[in-house]
Image (cartoon, rainbow, N blue to C red; front, side, top):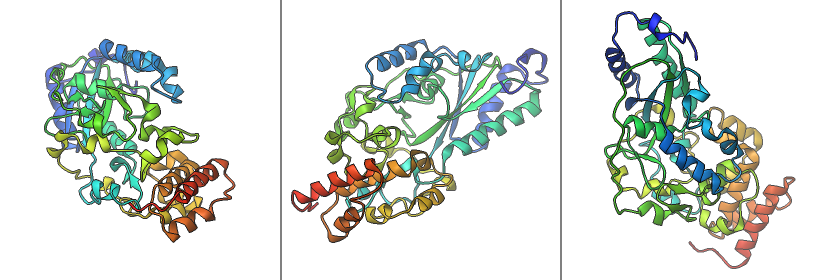
Length: 367
């Protein structure tokens, strides 16, 4: 906790109800799309988490297993926590090249829409910190800690319990008015304030568009994603070779995958982000694969400073692009760029380049 753990000695003029109302309104004033409050009982979601881990669906993300039930027991992570403020912030950039058009053009590299702009972690944490600091000025010191996809926290479960939406069949949080193109953030606190009702209804019904659309059949059942098959996992979390069985299905996806969200009918109701930080940088929404593959490590580090992409490292970045080039149209430029890296010093990159060249040797790709 960041301040005193004794709320009862510090509250000045606001009642718990007034405090909750102020938090939710101020969060919206600070730019969040919505804000709700919940308690820390995640027992139902803990069962789902343990079943997912027991099936090995977390793949090589050993930290998921290591933290275990810490994710589903907020007070174990931050002692004294009794309430969680959950916020939502849209990230889909209006100015980006249309996702379907990029996916249909094998000459371009597809980057998940959330990663086209600046890293969201800092922006959301700063706003949550400002929210907490302003509340401290209003009521006095209290205990809190801010998170956004940066610690063992069941963000989607918390958001669902707080009433921000429901967890769809693709395992993303869905809101019937806003879809799913948003980030989540949390403020763990010891304030005994009223909670909001959870989202009890599930509106997916018989729709399974996301399940059918997954290029690698990673959604093995409603709300069950086998990360070992997921392109987002394979291109971001996985540090080894991409299994050969999934390489062709990756198409031109070089960082993450949005297919399950692109086909979701609820996303037609959402509005684009108004955050300029989330607008595409360095033309990442429309850059040719051949150009991206010729970046140096210095270029990678410089251009992805302040970007979520930088954390995968230059090695995995090139591995991913090599696979995409193997799925690209067979052109002189594609072959030249691949051949230039056929003897790459990095064995991981070299193996994926070899696979890509072999794909083209089977006959021209004429997508």
